[in-house]
Image 1 (cartoon, rainbow, N blue to C red):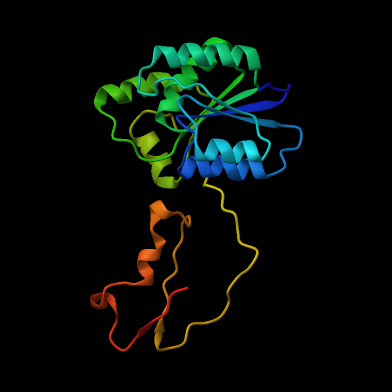
Image 2 (image 1 turned 90 degrees about the vertical axis):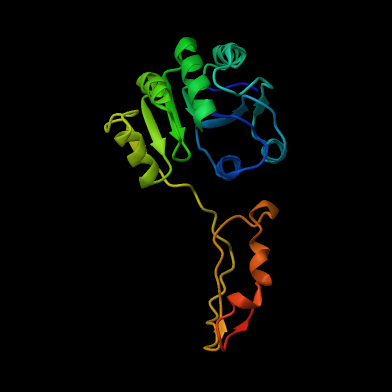
Amino acid sequence: MSASPQSVVHLLASLDFGGVERRMELLAEQPAGDIRHLFCAIGGGGNAERRLQSLGAPVRCLHQPTAIPSPAAILALIRLLRRLRPTVLHAHGAEANFHGLIAARLAGVPVRIAEEIGIPTHSARARRVFRQLYRSAHCVVGISDAVTGWLVDSGEVPPDKAIRIYNPVKLPDRHDRQAAPEDELRIAFVGRLEAVKNPWRWSRPPPCCWPAGFRWNSG
């Protein structure tokens, strides 16, 4: 795993399964031009790690504790970042933000980006810690208006550093434009077709959920 003059290290807590991991896969599938994207997990790998490797993306799992704070994780990241010398460190999620921003600052990474992937339940002490931590970030990304608003309203991130960037979506090649018959109820599921999301529960809903006079059609 080696970096180039224009490179971004994407740091996650793990590279197994999840929404953030899926975003990394989508990123690795796209042409990056002159910028090289590298993917790193503080902890272990798994499904996303294998998928990224199959796409030819550079991947590194440090197998360090991810719980905040982890001095071992910070030291491992400092060593890695000093060797890779990336242009940008983009941390995704609280554990990656905490350890990644500290390590990137100490390793001299020129651009440091944090990203909050949900609305956290931070205590007053945690808010003070992250407020200080985010001072070393050049910007803090929220994946929705609600998340970005919380970061600002909580006082953790000043308004001029907070930026909202929606999650990417990979559109299917085929679109079903067939209209549903008047006597048929059609429900659309928006999400990943993964077992953990269980979208197939709608294929056989309990009879109490059936609207009167409608027939059920799933597919």
